[in-house]
Length: 439
Ligand code: LLP
Image (cartoon, rainbow, N blue to C red; front, side, top):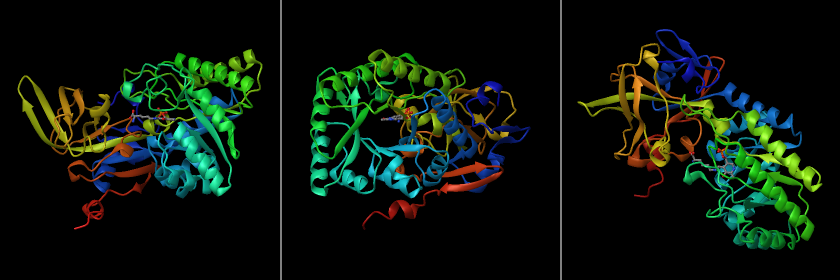
């Protein structure tokens, strides 16, 4: 049943069509499922735009020199990129593939930042020759690769170094990155961060403009941001005192949490903005340095609440007194998050939208894995074959982490706005997935 509590995790334009289904962006979800097939991912253009505006406004009203770079790993698509670009966003990418998609989607390459703990020399050369805005240097091998490229191409780049501040954000261990035992970045604690700064400053053509840290993802506490900012600025000030380094830019990464279930209450963008900008202003004031440009990299908080997934129910297996499995036509191939992180989701039955929830069921995917469960034990109206299940907060880290396991096809993605729908990613065909095989 669609309640007030569940409404808050759906896209902004979601409305109930009584006795019938839900509407997003003025489009009936049942109709979209019938027209485009299932599984189907639907993104609401207004929510995407509103989320971008909120981040830009909440940060810039407190700290005018803020660059908001969408972390494209959350969901990258050329049409989406064009919308983000119109909203004045920059982008962070972690591979050549994301860079090319961002560029083709019309993102100004000078507003793109490249991350990654193992960027290949080819990736580095390509983005440098395409005027990438910033490279976030992650490790010593990368410094060497960059130095070689700068010498051989006689070019220059602007870069930040990624430090690991040793702050635990208390999130799932798979998405915690700012602690000492992490594959990402240079730890301050071991002296590596200082060594990296020294090495970078010795390379002509490498303009080290600042430092970056990203402590993790889906962070519900705001205090770790305060600590990470404080540690980063203090470290930068030490480096400025000892070497010829000027802190012109500081990036605090992403990690802003969203609600996946009605019981979750993540901090608002305003609260994140308040703690981050205050921490930066205070650290700069107490060290008596000029305010650097601030960079933030929200991914999930832009894409996540903007998208929903729709599945059709196929088989139902009731094991008396144990569990009722309701199998849908997607699963871990399009959303690996429950299997990988034990992530929890909510669901509604579109064609029974105002019926009472009367039974506890487990929504299973169609993949050949017992762990392919999308939602364990959820209370829903009585479910029958062909019912349409809609899972909100599915816009981030579902499609980008999707696979063709069991040779299943990746879903289509639709964008809705003002009663109109358009395909922004076609459903795969068997020809598509077989076309790369040589036989
Ligand atoms: N910046 C950097 C350097 C990152 O590594 C990430 C995410 C972000 C920004 C964006 O973080 P966000 O605002 O989206 O939390 N697959 C996982 C999430 C992995 C995040 C990896 N890095 C999940 O499905 O929860």
